[in-house]
Image (cartoon, rainbow, N blue to C red; front, side, top):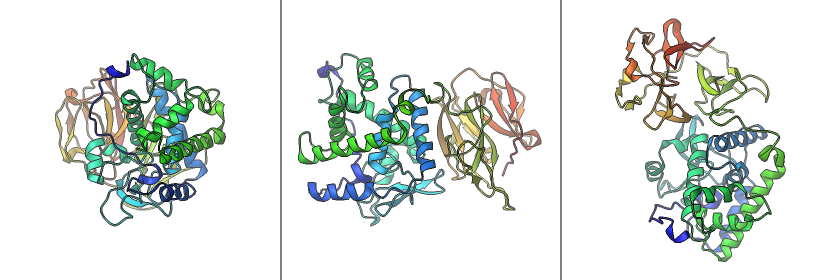
Length: 407
């Protein structure tokens, strides 16, 4: 029953509609701001489709819920699917550095008007907990990536639906998942879903004039995504990758943040349903038209270097910073794959790496031996012949055609 939902005084972040518009405003002025912003998304049709595909993949890999249109509707309403600074204008501010953006992540305008107080929401789903550092402290740097922003939004919505006093009286969490999975635009539960979003996700008081306005915006934003690709895309004949995989087709080549999670300067190959680093692009990665393989841009720039501090293997052992480099990957204690990227920080790819993998006889290209106890599934290192090797099962597997270097 709802009264038994273990309701807690959680840090309920007001993810304000319209790029963090949670400064006190009267209903009319806030509505005008929202409408102005929603018409200003500069996300291309290609990127819109890529991010929609990734939302489908994230939900397909989640064993609890699989109703991707609902989350696409939130993202479209909040930012028009924009994630990076420069993808939305004019009402945006430069947020913290995002390796996927090669610069600042998109930050909301209406909280601070870019006056330096750093109080806007961050990324496509507009996570907002006071200042940028406080928001990152609560949610982690993973929200600076597109996929991390998505996966965190999924959990936020599920927590909110469980704790809300306005959603149905679920006896179990599975009842809640079933309710969410069964919601369709205009169908049973649709109006309640919109009211829940306006209240819990946006912070509008239930039944207020602002709540009515925000409900209408979520309705419009979600219907726009439904009309853009059609019901079969979201629910049927164009399925996302199988659960547990994060890329397709097998052998496909992708720039990071272009159909697969990862650094936008890395070229990945889809191997066993997982995007594996194939090459670090010195001159950037070329995003080819849909259906064509991506590639590294040609040129004569010096190879990029990366150095990531404070990393740990899955077993908790410290990774010496001197052994880190672009494309070095290891499994974290949360069974997620972490990658040393061109932002010189560890980035959670949100790719699952659980399993009992232990690979002996491994070494970095400089000859430093890799302790088998430190290895894990999908760990990736630069080995002999300046080739990337991936740990799978009990042996190292060369990534065909790859090239790498240590700093």
